[in-house]
Amino acid sequence: MHTKLTVVTLFMSLFSLTAFAQKGVPAVEVKTLDGKSVNIQDYTQNGKITVISFWATWCKPCQLELDNVMELYPEWQEKYNVQFLAVTIDTQRALAKVGPLVESKGWEYTILADANQALKTAMNFQAIPQTFLVDASGNIVYEHSGYVPGNEFELEEKIKAVAGK
Image 1 (tube, rainbow, N blue to C red):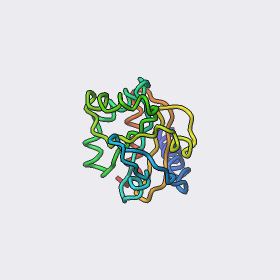
Image 2: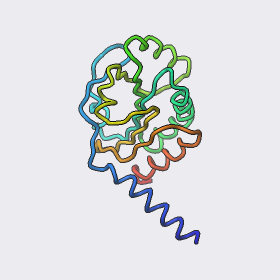
Image 3: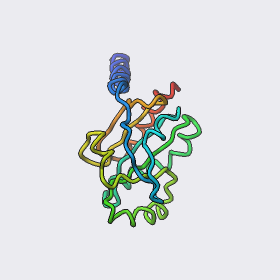
Image 4: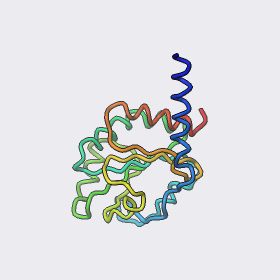
């Protein structure tokens, strides 16, 4: 029974990783915290596995996710050569809060701003936190809505599978 469950779980994991394999990250402009416009594809088509996490300063589950992932992120970088993009959907008025929050939390992610929510709209989701896993070829291979403690370990398993480790 345990073997069947393991095989079914493995199959479902592989299926969920390939379900998005042909969908790439759209070519949308976002901004760095210093206001420079960049195309999100500059980050997702560079040969690295990429995690994109959408968040906002007012979203407590988002902050908890980013706090908990930060504990694992240095190891993920070393093991899987992964990069993490934390994309805030805070409005232009609220962007002033982003830098101080990031600094106080010690988050070492690449922080990008989608104040007009063009990327959020193009990626077609409603709620945050919203996390996407992008393979080294720029294809979205996994997405997850919401956050409960422990989701970061599920994400690591997906990263590990994409990295082939």
